[in-house]
Length: 77
Image (tube, rainbow, N blue to C red; front, side, top):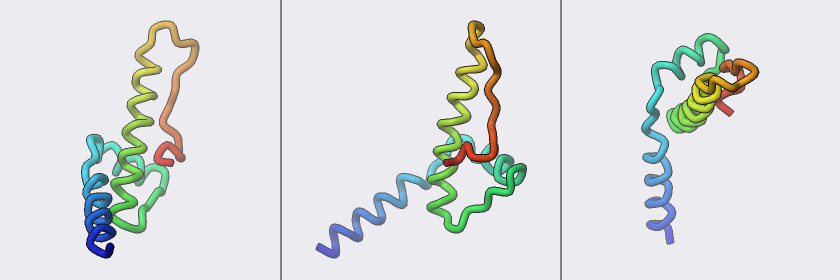
């Protein structure tokens, strides 16, 4: 049983060790004073930020949109 839990923990940690927009997320962290406590939290929130940033970009690329979306302080949650 302990081996299964350890394997799951390692796999879970590795899932979040990749973030496609890490430079933008670091800039976001500085601008909005959003530090993270651990490496896992950093990558977890970075991936959420990337998803939200992608949604903002897609929305703003729509020529029929009636408003412009922006990245705000809680876009990593």
